[in-house]
Image (cartoon, rainbow, N blue to C red; front, side, top):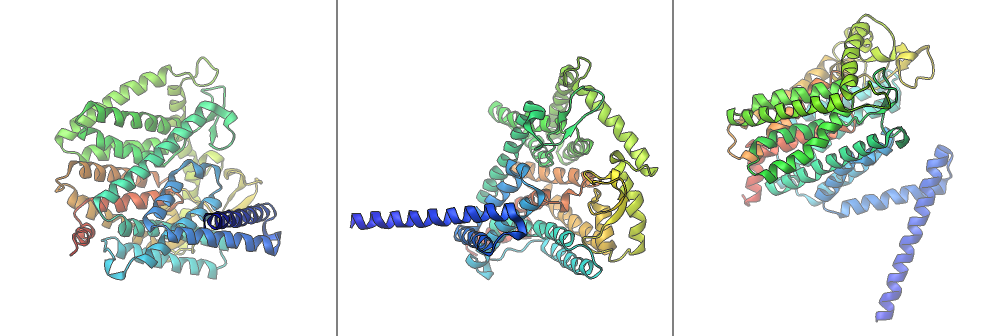
Length: 490
């Protein structure tokens, strides 16, 4: 019997190895040859996808969903193109959704105050996608725009349905925030390595330093920053404060070294929102922490030499970025076409086009004409049809019309109304701090969305949807009351 079992195990191992070898060769062939790859190569990739999808469905949907969250916030996304990142995200979220559908009875469905506005917003997105295809917009752009909204809605839905009790909420928070912190540390390591780290991170070259500086741009870091600064006032022991500072210091460093005015402003808005949300006792603790961070940060920035120039400091680089931003705004609204003014030039070019079709917009995937030298890697200085728009509110009105923009505002309004309406009545200190952190972080993201459409932009849209859903799981809304009833067997 032992010999038979050993032979069976060897046979299973051999079959798995053979499948893995065939799949690896197929993936490599398709990845190298693209659409010209053979039929057997595509068949191998299809079998591999079916195998992994079955494996994801076999797992508990909570596990599959946490894997998806880790992928979306982990350093893996740095090494992948946006298309591959979206494909893997769709695969993981699809596995979690299929597993939830198969394993969960309809009677255990958890309601939520945002399901109606998000559902109508998704329906309008699908209509805008169909309209975009009907007017001839490029299908890849249409699918990409539609996917990002569906990804946002799907992540929100899965959090509500799968993260039902306090234990699962805390588990999801640990996984999510730990993954973001790991990404922050990896980016700081790449910054320390410098330009030799390759093209994984963007770079900047200015007059304040003689070298090209790697930029640690991580939009997720602003959400973690907002949560940490709201947890600090409730820390009662030195050990708790020490752990918060150990996470807060690299997070602040990542935001500062991003050299992104948008992330700086986003973090500043999150600080102001946190102070407003805190009670008097909490404000004192936060203000002390902010004063300490400001003084230490100014001293370090003034003393930290950037590059090989003895005159260049981090503070000088930050000053140059701020003053350069003022020039970008003035030149952009004046119509100067350059790489530096493209964010504000979009408002001048696209804004009038919104008025030509104000109600339903130009459909998902719609492009606009702009000079090639104002677009990164355009390959020409002539006029081109460009797709990406930095302003969330402008791009929503341009492609989905005033109706689409109104639906998006409705989603956000219902979120803040449901969250903040119950926030001040919350008795639990930890839950209240987490809700304040998520709400403050999302307020900062809404300001950042004037120059980067993070709310419906992959992969940050998934984190923002997760933060919105988790914060509503922590306040006594209809959804959380229903969750407690299910937990108690009602």
